[in-house]
Image 1: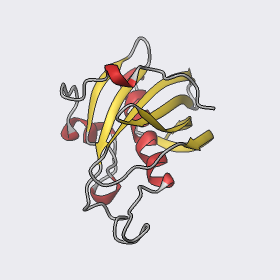
Image 2 (image 1 turned 30 degrees about the vertical axis):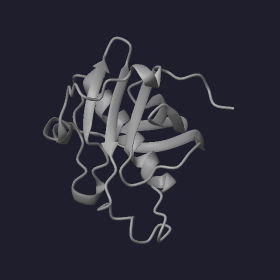
Image 3 (image 1 turned 45 degrees about the vertical axis):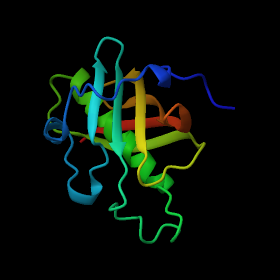
Image 4 (image 1 turned 60 degrees about the vertical axis):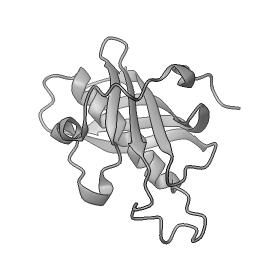
Length: 158
């Protein structure tokens, strides 16, 4: 049974971009095929909350081989997109971060729906625990108002 939404997905306005891809690149080191965020539409450092999205295109590196004829965004790519949102949020919350935040692990991950080319994969995350050695972010992702992912992502300063 999915947890209640961190943020009502029907209330998310993805048309008002707060950080574009160039701003994301200043915090996140991934490039080319590994960039899994298109934009960040909301960051609240007091609530430690982020809303970001990935526009999934038919040009993604996995489309040709991940279920030919019915391409589905692999779960591992969903996890990477959520981890990149966590990394970006942690960098906003920790102003003296020396380097970047790496993907340290995940817990309680569930895939609850399909993500296909043409979808907007919306990530909502809220940091539950922020320590010097690691951070834990509760995350959910939606296509429209349907929850397609939930879990906890662990980030570690590198």
